[in-house]
Amino acid sequence: MLAIIHATLVLTDRLQPESFVTAENGVITGFGAMKDCPDLSGAEVYDAKGLFVGPGLVDIHCHAGCGIWFYEDPEKAAAALLKNGTTTVLPTLYFSMTKDELVENFAVIKAAMHTGKTPNVAGFYTEAPYMNPKLGCDRESNPWKGPVRREDYMPVLEAAGEDAKVWVVAPERENIEEFVKDAKKINPSVRFAVGHSEATPCEIEALMPYGLCIGTHHTNATGTLPKYPECRGVCVDECVWYHDEIYAEIISDRMGIHVDPYMQRLVRKIKGDDRVILISDACVFDGPVPETGDYEGATDILFDWAGEIAGSKLLLLQAAKNFSKHTGAEMPEIFKMASKNPADATGFTDRGEIKTGKRADLIVIDGEYELKQVVFEGKLIEA
Image (cartoon, rainbow, N blue to C red; front, top):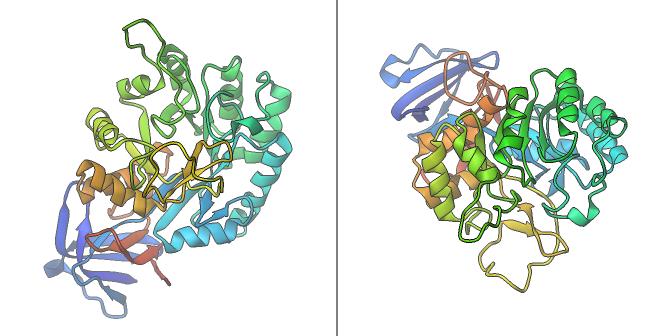
């Protein structure tokens, strides 16, 4: 048994100081005030000394771990993230990969998953194959600009199999509903996200009955509003705001480049703390910083060679700290957005909060979101 004592627990609705949490066989067996702490004879004890203990972080949209593409070395990428507090991650593949490359890269990551070498990898979140060709970084390399055809996409769906937890789609693509139906046959519990899209609300709503419930990196690569003279139209972002069922992903970088701090506050106000998901969108693009644009201090974002913003160098804990700074959200709300909400959105209801019976994935941090200790399935992870 593991026991963490003298902790300030980060629960979904409050902070609970001077508390304990116990874990055995990989799950949380109890928590409460120190005065109610059970006999810990024989337990491994970690004294948090008043620090904050929250659920492990769940990054559902992450292409790389600490500068390593998942498809190049899934073991190293996963291990780097685990040591930095991401106890659940969905490696993300991108639309710039060909059919053969997607099939091969799924196989590489699945091989590591199924041999237990990437224990915090829980499946795939895939920004492929059918995005809007007009949108997204590295779009010059998009090999999926042609028709949505079963003979093209079925090998990709089959390669991902039931490990595909989220498929990102542009609902305006012709025949996209057939792709969605086929993905659903392979994994009935799969979720869909709208991303790299300029779909109308009606086009998005048509896919919601199949499980579309996420707005991929909200307000990034989401098209433009219809251009009526002196009249605001509606597009992807407005549809995400309107529907309570849809979660809004946010990339919260240090300077608020991906999503302006005012927009982050607005999204939080509209969606509420139960429908915002913090993501890293971590990548390894190495294009130069564009000469045009004010990017001074923006050390955690990346660019492709066309000068487009191309993901980030963020760890999810850093994104959490940034979102707190930009919006004023308190720690219980931040952990909802970085743990519980992404877990709930993708069907991982066994984790994401400190609750008896949930998986014993925990992190210990100070008040500045500096990581002190990671617990994975009830075991202390060496730094």
